[in-house]
Picture 1 (tube, helix red, strand yellow):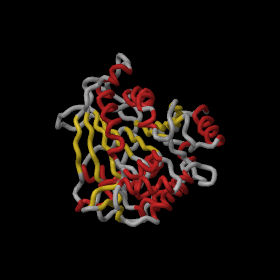
Picture 2 (tube, rainbow, N blue to C red):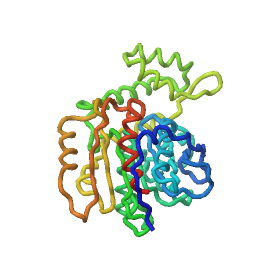
Picture 3 (cartoon, helix red, strand yellow):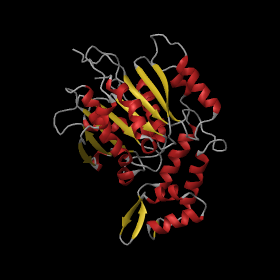
Picture 4 (cartoon, rainbow, N blue to C red):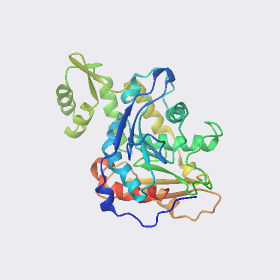
Length: 342
């Protein structure tokens, strides 16, 4: 029998939740699947009732979302005490600990990045996720994952989101966090700055003297201190020097694919059982006026039962880094909707 939420939990309960159990897991290289971490709302070893995948942005890693996941997971379980949630924080190909995994073959594009996620599900023997959240480039990987599942690219058993069933009558959810769904024009969009960062990194030696050297060098080239320090956070120790915690050339290929892919058709006609939501950061400079108007028009149109749902949410007082700029506001948007699945 399906579980229902009798009393809608308050935000106070969400924010006062205990820190959940964290598992750090690197998959076996023989499986050639992605590295990941699990954040569980409890320390039980039994299979979770619900699973959410979290996909990071360009040059990031799953750990970028660890703090937010530690808040979100228990908030969802608090809404239905009998439900246990698992957050799977993925390191996408060429990023984080997955950058060192051999066998994630090119092309390094959105389609293969989405297939990596499906391969991880199959390799671990998991049920298909109930929720997928993707930030920035990860948002487009999430859209590609949903599109590929709907087309049957990952086999007949693939289900994202979960289709309507007697056991779980609520549709699964896809959250796209501050990611423009169509093609990106770098001349009109702030991703042009990302392109400049990538071009600059390609001119640097693979072995960096120190993090402080890198930050100072980036600032001298005209990049902001905050951006330079974030780039510096992507270094890892290698002997007496520092190396990148990502595969730069592969990341460049992924960025080019991110710019060139177009998921407007998916948003215009989401498959039945799919609940797609875009969160647009109020102060983000990634959005052109015509794109904002287009997504709002899609969200306001009437749809029949033969198609899925699409909605848009504006996160106030936030730039592109939604989980850092306004984590409380992001939780207020995500938690009640995701909790409705339980």
